[in-house]
Image 1 (cartoon, rainbow, N blue to C red):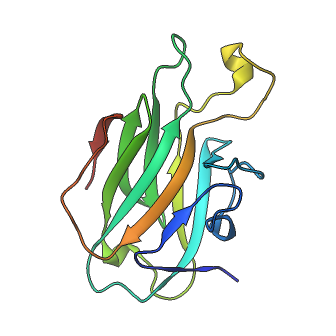
Image 2: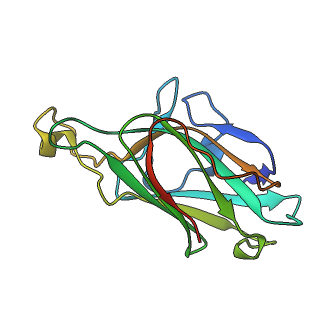
Length: 164
């Protein structure tokens, strides 16, 4: 059974956070106090939504990219909801990004799959800085799906963002 997310609920990815029940493949099992790393090229977030949205929504995400200069200076993420493209951005430093999720992209009944694809994910072995074979993309701190649609916004770490 899939966990239910409430519109406007802020989900925290830390080890004691409330996002754990939504995690599918591609996430660090333990997490840290502040967040949780994606540890593969794809990470899934599984949820049912309550109440059903009456309009488009805004997905707000706070993340820290896995970077190590000079070899890896930015991370990118593609966002999909139920297989439909929802956005893209690239970051060099901690970022808060927002993208619009159209209401028709969501399943009103059953499991929704929010997928994050990390084309630049890299292991510490590949960078020569450690022995962890997992491919790190971003450390997620929080995620929130809001029923309103404010203007697109970025924190200072955002490099590129697109939405359809």
